[in-house]
Image (cartoon, rainbow, N blue to C red):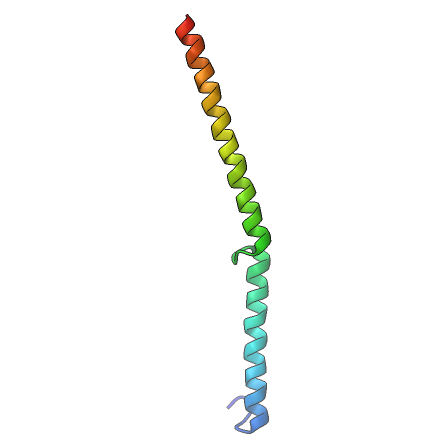
Length: 72
């Protein structure tokens, strides 16, 4: 045994310790970004939108270069 014994208070203390550890793990994971929060999702969407815009701009640039090469 390790100190809490078999009393009802020991069981409650064990449950509280388990909940405290699980809560600490969840908080640490959300702060590190391992669990996607709403702000992380919006940041991902913003990055995706920027990437789509860059792809669109690159396509336009390639078409312009192709047109210039056709003129030559």
